[in-house]
Amino acid sequence: MKACLLSCLLLLIAPSVFAQECAQVLGPSRFEWAGKIEDAKLSFASGSSSERVRVIKCLVEVPGEQAKELLTQALESDEVELRRAAVESIGIMRLRSFEDQLLRTLEDRKADLREAAALALAQLGSKRAVDKLVGMLSDGSGDVRLAAVRALGALREPSSIPAIAGVLGDDSKDVVEAALEELSSDADPTTVYAI
Image (cartoon, rainbow, N blue to C red; front, side):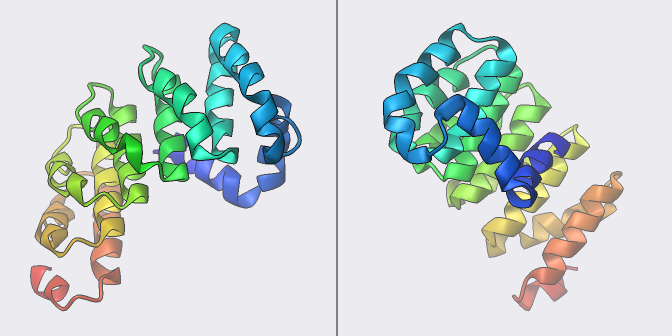
């Protein structure tokens, strides 16, 4: 969760730093991306693990259609950090064409990937994810449960309110606080009843 939040904060707080880093990968302007796609593919194919992750994170600066090939390769990788970067980028870019892959990632054995997929699906507004996200409220990882609460809150699906209320007794203080925030921010009167 912290890595995902850090990436999102970097985009919000220091976009110029992010832009400078991406300019090294993509060129100084996102409009130059079309001419840099082959360079990015080469860098992705032959670069170090950290370079490959950087290329994927910078894809948020380019049109989604042009990024799909590299995102697909990253999702199929054995490298967890690379897959996580792809999942996060897909969420930020709101690429609905990856919804099925993200839904499958909710069942990954790696908690980091389940967490990132939950948040990305919320960014996509995926109502198809609601039942799986409700199931994730009992995940063994507190970070995954927290992401599931946040994702369900973002999706605003009334049927998930009782499930969110059900985690008010969770062992994780962060999960409980997030559930209280999500329940109290919901304008639906059934929320009060659920609590």
